[in-house]
Amino acid sequence: MAFGTMTSRILGQLRESLLAAYFDKRITDAWAAAFKLPNMFRRLLGEGSLSVSFIPVFVESNLDSPARAQNLVNSIYTFLLVILGGLTTLGVLYPDPLLKLVLDAAYQMDTEKYLLTLRLTKIMFGFIFFISSYAFMMGILNALGQFALPAMAPTLWNMAMIVFTILPHDLFPMQGDQLGWGVLVGGILQAAILVPALRKAGYFPKFSLDFQNSDFKRVLRNMVPGLFGMGLLQFTTIINLHFSSSLVEGTISYINYVDRLIELPLSLISVSLGTALLPMLSGLFSKNDKAKMSAVTQQYLELNLLLSMAAAAGLFVLARPIVQLLFGRGQFGAEDVLNTALILKTYCWIMIFSSAVRVLTPAYYAIKNTWFPAVVSGVCLLAHVLLAPVLMGRYGVYGLMVSTTTSAALNLFLLLGFYPRFIAGFQYFSFLKNAFRFAVLAIFIGAVANIFFYLEAVLTGTVGLILNLVVSIGAAGVMFVIGGKVLGIHSIGDILGRIWRKILRR
Image (cartoon, rainbow, N blue to C red; front, side, top):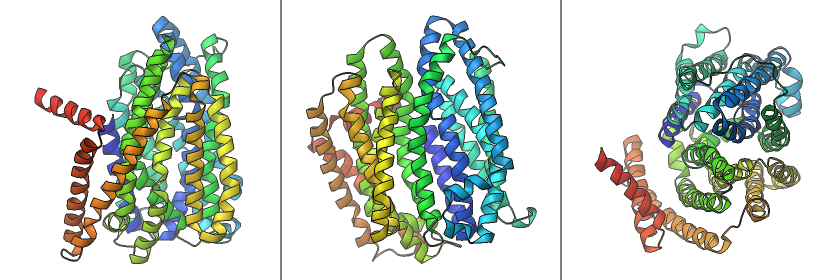
């Protein structure tokens, strides 16, 4: 699953690099702003509350009877079709009120830019229907133990975006249109590739109006607080869009590029772990094995922290050369590189907290508790709304990033603090001891990565930049292994041992 996610994210990074090179900041700002709304609804209805409410009930019903599980699939997807159909229609026909609600007045005053944002929103809103269908099918396949194909499917979306990005501009009525059509076509392809696998598994949904069965009602009851919680969590991105749209042109694009850079390690680490953990933890809870459930959660939470701390340290130290290599060409000039790198340095630490939340939250969903994460999300959102304007008044976009990171940290501490209250015991002392060792290792990794700036004076140009990064990241990787052994972090040796044994078997 991590390999499939990595392939998708690498293509996604290529997509963003091409986007920055081929289009000026006015168009990339408009595209990023327009994509926020359908992407938010996708995370809510597809990968969000419906998925996490549905999977535990599906796992339980499938253990009891495949016919019962099929009935649940049918009723849930029929319900989803009604919701998605109505939402997509409204979004395509009437996106103006939504955009005016989320974009700052300063952004709306730029008439040409706002009209392009409105046009792209209309084109892209159909993406919600297809990508949410994909997420529902992915949830079923994941619950059945199939992870590879669903993880690889997003590569089709990224490939479609890459193709449409490099198409000649004169093929479309307005420059920027191709980005909207790339999103829509990619969403169709991403959903379509899972249909044969779902048919083969025997769980392709059929139209059904059986909304009275008990499993459907349970999913719906769990979904409502989950929808509220996920909505609050996703609303943070909309609030950030509103705040950033009041700043200078290009800020929305810079934040979007930084998000992509952070999402790469996040996807490889926490998304893969979190997605795989939900059906596993649901199964353990169904067997009433809470001790094993708690041990598995802590094990993978610690693994997640180990990797995310190291990745954050590397991104902080090497922010400028990484941004230069990935984006520094075409329409993306030296000032753009510097601005994006400074935002990345400020914001990279969020991956430590966000990744841990993505691994910890499935434990609550596995016990069908969707209301407490919702309450926590509400508290964190309120803290962000109050703190962001204060910090932005002094530090601009960097204050916005610090406020978002603080909100994510609060989310983690609350979920972790109440874990024994709702789920099972948690070994806090050993967890904190290991987290401290991971932090020390991350500091060593960052120090070693600084070798780049000594090599930079010797090797110049694009080739020199690539070689310097390879050497610096390679040296940091060696320090990760050696430092981990010195500090007694056994999980690194376990991972390397498993990889080596798999290679030998092949």
